[in-house]
Structures are given as structure tokens and as C-alpha cells.
Length: 226
Ligand SMILES: NC(=O)c1ccc[n+]([C@@H]2O[C@H](COP(=O)([O-])OP(=O)(O)OC[C@H]3O[C@@H](n4cnc5c(N)ncnc54)[C@H](OP(=O)(O)O)[C@@H]3O)[C@@H](O)[C@H]2O)c1
Image 1 (spheres, rainbow, N blue to C red):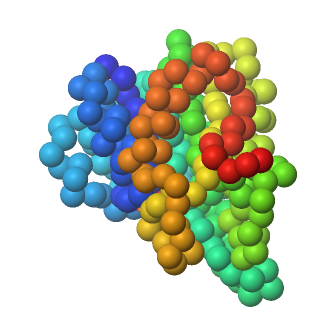
Image 2: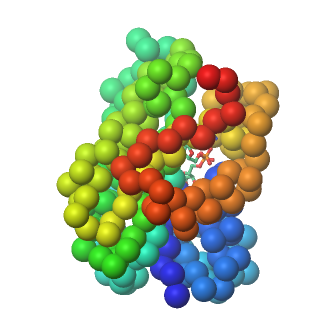
């Protein structure tokens, strides 16, 4: 039985990822998000835990959840918050909130997760964005979002260096556009090349096998040229 934790699961890519992972009866999928999703109730191998990356006690909250789960084999840090505003109009609260969800809360959650990651083999995948990938095309309005997504890329490299002598692997996928509510809210009418279910399948396959080929890597997942 694989125990798989996914953070950020109520909608979009995270929701589809939970359903994709749960389609394998050998998986027990732990969905951590602020809200549940009705689609999960039909699956006995999906276990929802209410979890907020913006909670001031996020590290303790995460520890309490991981204590009920036990040893974790796979983990996907998928939660994200997008702020689309001109640089000078971004408030301190919006900046703080964006960073709390996209990097600070995940950093603290990983601190809590460490004792529970299977020492015989565990793959953690962080979900970043092409906007946070060095040298990629950038978009005005995304200074808070994309810099916080760049931070999780860097975190992946630093965590991997510190744990390179263990069997805990961490990689980071920088996604291009996917047709989700987040994209529609930020860029109404934009047509993305991928549906959330397609991206979820890719992430699930990468989660199962990517650690054999990549460790501590920041990988662009984009069909743009270059
Ligand atoms: N869609 C794209 O084009 C695109 C492109 C590049 C990268 N990405 C990245 O891919 C990931 C998924 O994106 P998406 O488009 O599926 O976004 P989405 O539809 O907005 O879903 C984001 C998920 O994050 C969760 N979340 C937000 N704040 C949270 C918090 N404080 N604590 C816990 N969970 C929280 C939300 O659940 P709750 O509200 O229940 O908490 C939601 O399920 C994100 O990291 C995003 O940055 C997306």
C-alpha cells in the first residue's frame, strides 16, 4: 500500500491528481486542503484532512495530520495562490499570503513531514510554474506569484542537497498553462493547451518514476518554444 499525500486538492490539477492516484487500489491518497471535494466521497482510498497553509500553526497542524498517516511514500506539494496585480498595487497582505501558500507554508510543512517520509524511498514533487523558471517568458502582474514560485524551485535544490545521502528524493515541476479555475480567474478567456486531468496523469507518472532519473531538479513542463 502506497501512502500518498497531496496538498491543495479541492479543485483544478490537485483534485484531478487525487482522483488519478486513487484509481490505483494499491494507493491510499491523503488529500490536504482547506475544502473537500464531493467527487472524493465515492473513493474509499481517499482520505481528506482539512489543512490551511496560511494557518499560523501550519507546522504543528501538519505534524498532527502526518502522525495519523504514518510513513509516507509519495508527496505532491500542489497548492498555489495567484495574485495578478501591477507591482506597485500589491499590498503587504497579498504579498505575505502569496508567499505563505506558495513557499513558506510548504517549507514548514516539509519540516513537519521529514520524520514521516519513508527512509527506504520517498519521492516529493513540488509544483511550481514556468513563471518561476529562470529565463522563461514573464508576464506583467505576476511579480508576487512568480517570485514565490521561483522560491520553491530553489527550495527543491537546497532540500535535495541537505538530504542527498538519504533515499528521499525531491523534484520540482514548473508547469505551463493548464485550463483551471486559477488560470481563468487570472486570465479570463485564455485557452491553455492542457486540461487538468491530462496534467494530473503526467504528474502521477512522474511521481511514480521520476525519482529514478531526476533528483533535486527543476524541470520545465511546457510546450512553448523555447
Ligand atoms: N493552472 C495553471 O495554468 C498553472 C500553471 C503553472 C503552475 N500552476 C500551479 O499548479 C498548482 C495547481 O494549480 P491550479 O491551476 O489547479 O490552481 P487552483 O485551481 O487555484 O487550485 C489550487 C489549490 O490550492 C489549494 N490551496 C490554496 N490555498 C491554500 C491554502 N492556504 N492551504 C491549502 N491549500 C490551498 C486550493 O484548495 P483550498 O481552497 O481547498 O485550500 C486549491 O485546491 C498551483 O501550485 C499552481 O501555482 C498552475
